[in-house]
Length: 115
Image 1 (tube, rainbow, N blue to C red):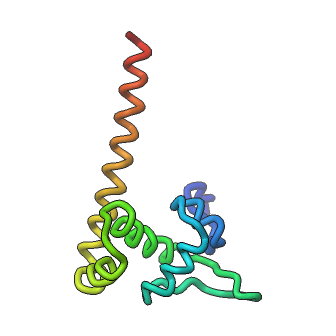
Image 2 (image 1 turned 90 degrees about the horizontal axis):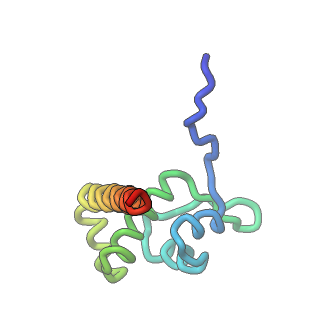
């Protein structure tokens, strides 16, 4: 059996790690947990939150709706409830577009240094 170096071995992330991933405060994440019933990270010990990969994907969709597209929390909740697959797809598309934009900006700066 070969060692898979691309596999992410971490099953759970702390609230600090997740807040750094999204550039949000920990209090915002805790507030979103109250506002979005599907977002339920595991709690252990002294109510220490542990976010799974599915929790992070849920947060990615919420972040896209609220921070990127500018939805109010109530409207984002309705959108996720009514059209979950559409919200997931749009979050993925925006993520891909941001990656492409960043790559294009890197290429542009590399081309400018050649001139």
